[in-house]
Image (cartoon, rainbow over all chains, first blue to last red; front, side, top):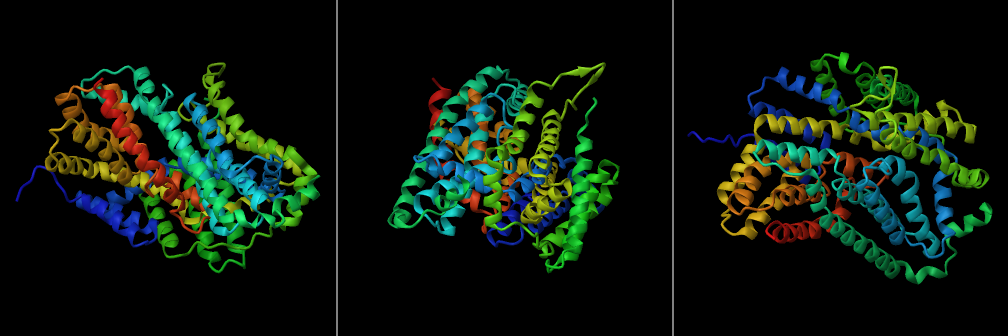
Amino acid sequence: MHTAVNLWPLIGVAIIIVGFLLRANPVLVVVVAGVITGLTASMPVSKILTVLGSGFITTRNIPLIVLLPLAVIGLLERYGLKELAQTSIARIKSATAGRLLIVYLAVREISAAFGLTSLGGHAQMVRPLIAPMAEGATENRYGVVPEKVIYKLRAMSAASDNVGLFFGEDIFVAFGAIVLMQTILRGEGIEVNPVHMALWGIPTAICAFIIHAFRLSRMDVQIERELGQQTSKVPAAAAGKEEIR
Amino acid sequence: MIFKLDYFYILLGLMLAIIAVLSFRDKANPRRFTTGLFWALYAVVYLVGERLPPIVAGVIVILMALVAGLGGVKLGHYGTFTEQERRESASKLGNRLFIPALTIPITTMIGSVVLKNVKIGNLLLLDPKNFTLVSLGFGCVFALIAACWLTRGTPAQAIRESRRLIDSIGWAVLLPHLLAVLGLLFTASGVGKAVAYLTTSHIPMDSRFIAVAVYCLGMAIFTMIMGNGFAAFPVITGGVGVPVLIGVFHGNPAVLASIGMFSGYCGTLMTPMAANYNIVPAALLELPDKNGVIKVQVLTALPLLAANICLMYFLMYR
């Protein structure tokens, strides 16, 4: 019974998959998977705690991006930022949620391709501005929008931010991923020009835009089909607009 | 350097400490003590940081995970304005309200592009390893000043409002940390080697198209397991990409790397392991389904993955 590759660590992967399928609390699933993966690699418990602890401390930078802006965003929301975003989009008669998100996708992807990855983000842009605008545009057209559609609009807003960021930033030559790929290929004895890697990313970046933009325009069609009949109702945002003027 | 990232860790730590106290005192929260404990422990992580012995931090992680996993973090009462009041305030302040909101991304952009290498005397102005995050920190501070001036609100009120948003994220805030650590544990215990071994020894790769498909799918699936493409790239490229696609079929390595990494990103769109892109935003947008963002992304990711396989097949061997 001796294989060259130890397959036991895959138990951790299995725990993750089963945990998510059973809809157990992800935090517990991940901690259990981590501890068991450590044990299969025959780490003592104190070592596992140390790895968990030091990893936790060094990854403080990831949540900082989301948490720090929340003080400002919270204050601005108290004074009506969301409502303002909704009414200002309502003034543009041709605006639909899909068209708005296509524009956002394009801006996000192009700016990320020039290395301006911070010109977006879920806490800074999507929650306070983009999602309320998508909701506002839809309410302005169809009046009261069912919750299911609202959630779909919000999820699509977040998705557009992700797609734009991921498939834009890899075209930027100085981006970390390009440097990483160059280093790893160099380790394998292959020398690659970073500019070539960035350029060969462009076809995929274009495909990503086309596919996601197509889905956004399909979303408009779907919303029109679901809510199109009730246009006679007074639009919620328009009712509010009277006070704004 | 003059401005270190640590200052903003302390700022966030203070913010979390105040939120913890507010949570303890929030009688409308059915789990106010455990909720307060959760944020207090998290405040310690930011305030004490690297001075905390790793094993103590490890115990804190387990404690926080237990509190969160057993339903100890709940919503409270936040005394928000009514929609009517918010609409009136929006019409009074008008478009000026957008200024503080846009201050964050604009300051971050200017800081990370223009001030990146600026020195005063012999000292770099911004922490060179974290200049984007330091710029973001400044963006938040400037935006807060502008917002307080504009709305006549106070920083204390800003923290009370941030508690409403931070509570809506709740336990999901732990996931990015935990998954990053899990990735390290996976790497240390050889999950990568095991996956590469399974794919290379069980799938016949004598056809060029199958080899390309295995590489792209491998990148996507392994990224889904690890939660990020950076961890998947060395494993799958070393296991399949270099020996088969370049070694046997003599493909163009620039195309391999570029489209390979993008295939990994298709995986990122489909996995709860990429918590900061998928789960945290779902919580932040108050979606009832924490997988709501992933569900809408799958239909973009799968066609794009297919497109990647075709692009790589045709572009790599022109």
